[in-house]
Length: 398
Length: 141
Image (cartoon, rainbow over all chains, first blue to last red):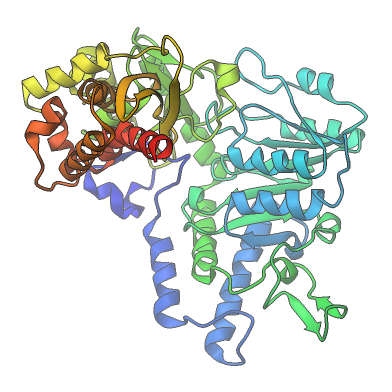
């Protein structure tokens, strides 16, 4: 779909590493160039037309994000540098002052490092406990398993909506319902979810949602922290400085701005935020339901073609996203990636930053194909043809 | 990689690497070496006898280039003095950077000369050298 919008796709490249980052359509690139060329002023500062236009465009993106995830208030949308920073803000700014010794945070072994390490730090600083919701034989998070590990001390469930190795879609709405019945907060890492399917924060009832622009056709260096307004009001700013303060005279008289400015100190990535707005317009035009359905069709096509290949071991045969993870018998994943690279096919090899997942899956490294709407059936045919010939892989992997 | 002989040396060392085993006996120091993309991960075990690298073994998971490079490096460095080993590492680094280097000194390791033209594979070939350099500098100086 929409391949003509992506300048890179004219270059005979097959890009299957969309979970790492997505390609950028021309409209997003043009929008960023337009900012730097025609109105490169700062935001929220000047009393002149150029700066006014910056404010309009910057805040328009906030409005687009609000609508895109169905948030209730503009103040609930905070621009960050990405998912990682947003998660760190939630953990350090909201939960660090709140959680006490022996409070429990539930995560899973398939979480990305950015949803693990900030919590690990609270284990040291606040003496909290990080416990794991067991995964089932497909490495899925099930409601039954969740219920088994909730205790009176559980205060937070922090999980990815779609994991970046297995690609399973978590039952977020049900998780939130159960969590809230037990007065537990839910933090949703939407990095792999928001770019690929409709996410409605009101319907899901998540407390915090974080995601990155660059995985959804937007620029790098921009992300979103969504939080229910009454919770964000209690999130301590980690970064202090310009743009977030109302006034200050001495250490005891510092007055901060209201949301969202309070959590957006310093000059933000203005070009990135404006470009992100264009990415959202672009995705809306295609339709998130269309994107999700197309990716699932593509995935099924890929799985059906890989299944008969005896030397291919698929880790996640069942999965409702565009992520397919596998290994080639007796070939190190990185060598598979180098082999495919010779034919201009970009795939990811490694542990995909989910370093504790190996304890569940039993393999350290895998090859990952992650699809997006601009991938095609023909590209999958090309990939499968190269993967079908085991002798060729062995011969050409170095 | 087009040269059949080069390919054969790399594959032989990948499929049957030299000294890929836990060290037998005591007195070994361990040096871990891994690359930035968190895939290749090798533990080197080095036994020093005075100024000499008396024995080296390794364990770990890595790609064909890293494993074979480790195997070749171990064969070439066992028995060398610290300064000889550092000289070897220096020549290897020159080769990987596409500069003039001492082919006699590097022996089989010359198979990675072509690697200098493949940016992402440079790191793989250099991985064990990085580890052994760390071990030498840390434990002998």
